[in-house]
Image 1 (cartoon, rainbow, N blue to C red):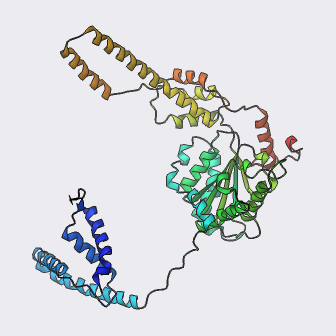
Image 2: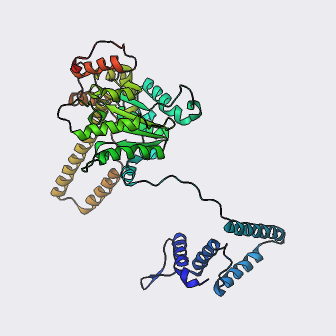
Image 3: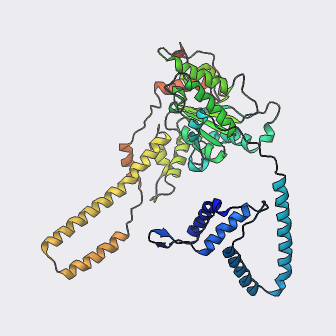
Length: 451
């Protein structure tokens, strides 16, 4: 074996080992200085990789260093460990012979899945790892019934797939979360993704659409083939009414209809496999704009409505759990915020939290004015130095006062509800829930906006 052909491989491993061991490496004339131990380590790694070959590298420098290390280790070790050394040598010889046999008769290669095509590579960046989301069910203050149903529909098939192998029990393939804006639909999807431990693909129109004719359908197909590769998978479509709306819309482009047809064909169509663990989770504020075939594929349709008084109290306690609070009456706050969504309550708490900050800034401005007046009066240098020391001590300790009920009342005057609880959109949502949602009355009357 010619050593010059493998010099680069040995030097690279030696440099990496040297940089890992030395935090402050030594440089001479702009070049890195490598110790002999690092070179011997790189050579040993190379020899281990080539241990199955008949030829072996024989270098005098490496032999001398290894002999010196053996001599030093032999002096430090006691006589009682000689028997153990012989046993370890025998085991090493046996492992070396086994490695040679394996090299002569290599095991069959592992069967891996097909590589991603060009369309799957475009969607691969949309796969979000669960640890990067950072939202759990504990961060959601209310919606206990919805959280329990989602855990039953999503978590149970992922944790106990043995219960859903045959019969009528099969994993749910589609869940729709609908309701007024700001009620926590997207936050529920994030909590499901982080706690389920499944692959999470966030889909939007920019992920699927393309300027080239025919590539939209290929991107939709690649979405489901990639989801099958990394299954179990949750495909999340936020504002699903914009992508999978009714196909009878006036003025809609032909390409949008093809995207919807392709999406439905791969979601639940002729070539859909029953064993694929793919869940389509969608959220929308306008479920009555969805196509009827899309509604049929959402097996469970859950309405996330405006929080009640008890739920608003729980949300406020969750939002203010890590803040300094001075005897807040959460029941009074819950009754004050009638018609507020979860997002409105968060904006209310943020606005109230700014009030102590404003007061602190005003106090600092008054101190600055006093300092300028003292400087103009021309005090002695000693007094100035003493005052500077006191100022430095005060700057290190910055304390904000705790929130009070007055802060929350003043914030309510600035933050109003963003959704009309008694408006026409809310009545349409309730009518749609009665027809298609969970717990509805299933009235046979047709909705007025479908006429």
